[in-house]
Structure formats: structure tokens, C-alpha cells
Amino acid sequence: MTKDFVDALAARYVQAGDEQKASLLFGIEANPSVELIDFLLSVAGNRSEYDLARIEAIKAAALAARLLDIFQAQRVVGALLKLVDEESDDEILSYVLQALAWYPEASGVASRIAPLLGEENDTSIRDAALAVLLAQKAQPEAHRILESYLDDPEFGAYIGAELQGNA
Image 1 (cartoon, rainbow, N blue to C red):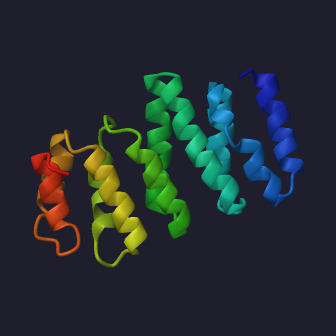
Image 2 (cartoon, helix red, strand yellow):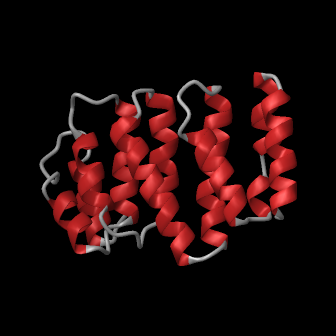
């Protein structure tokens, strides 16, 4: 996607109503570029933006970066981890975690996600955090964290089955 196209998209986006913003971003990841990822990350990180548009931007940025190169993937993972640290909206956070699960090879994710498994968090957040850790279970850090939850009344049995390869 060319810079001119992304500039035109950004201009249409600014003029669009909330309901149209998410539609403008839906499926946009199919033609990735650095400029597109820049635009999507700016929407994703803007807390005053319409939630559905932010969700589409999160998904599209995560998918687009996978189609480009390792640098863009690392950049998007970093932006998603920043959202993990800063986001207060559980629905947005849930989608951020879903996007992180698409990066099972990313380093440094497991330790940042582990606190979200705590019982003080909403069940949807705990479930999404578990999905990220299970996606990364081949990594020693994630494996160690998962093992520490084998006694968890909600997740323990499932984690045990996953770690044994029976799930």
C-alpha cells in the first residue's frame, strides 16, 4: 500500500462517522506497508477513538505486520505490549491479547502477560491471557509461567493437558 493511499485512507477516516471508521479498516491488512502499520497503530493507541475502530486497527496492524517482516512484527508486538500496560478497557485489552497470541515466537511477552492471569482480572482477560501463554508454550518463559498455574482451580487441569499435549 503506497503512502498516497494511506494518506487518502487517513483523510477519509478522519471525516468518517464512528460506524464507518471500523468498516474503513476492515480487511485493510491484506495490502500491508510500513505507512499502513503506522496509521493503524496510531488509531489503536488513541483512547479517544471509537472502540470498534480501535479493535479493527489492532487486528489489522497485527496481521499486516506478520505479512511484512520481522522488524514490523517486533514493532507491532511492542505497541501491543504497551497497550497491555496502559489499556483500561477490558474489551480492547481482550483484542490486544488475541493479537499477541498470533505471535507465538515473540520474546518478552509471557512475563508481561502473566499478571493478567490473576483472579482480580475479568474472566475474559484471564482467558485471553491464557491463550497468549498457551500459544507461546514452546518458549521456556511461558512454559514456566504455565506450570506455576497447574494448581489453579479454573485453568490448572486444562493447562496440564496442554503441557502434556493432550488438549
